[in-house]
Length: 230
Image (cartoon, rainbow, N blue to C red; front, side, top):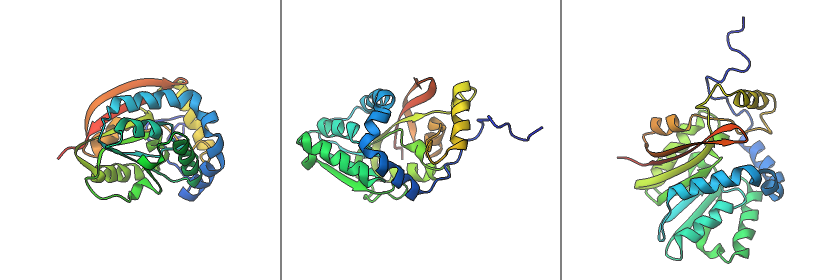
């Protein structure tokens, strides 16, 4: 008998592709990304953003802003007295988002940057809120605590973190197990995978204030809102 079944989901799977491979992939698909994902990610991402309850005048960061759908909404929510920041590893995504904000007349109220969330290029206690939509699960398992610590560093005391993510909480889901099997086979293309969102946040010292369980084409998904403590 094998020590671990091929479809076992007890542990979070690794992400074996490199950051450079991820950048190249998202650069290539940046112009088509909305067509590939809008039908299933957009609704949950907008729902998660609503749960973050952004207010006018706040300073907000989106990590992994992609094509800028949510970032545009963040710019609108913070208003003229607030500031929206976005960071993404892909220069292709940055250009798509820049054009989106230019068309909307909002580019002057947003600051876009290419970079890696495991080493955020912002000063401590900068943001009232940080948002991640289907982004945290793209980081390799050892990096997730590092990303959450970096978010904690740049959040102001009492600042909020909102996350939408594929979830491993219902680890016995057949569809989830099949998806993880596919991730093992083609990790450079199916680079996201379900993670333990709530446990990761609690382990990083956040206080959970809201949690919702959803389904993404049958795959378990979580929306979690947490606050920085201490």
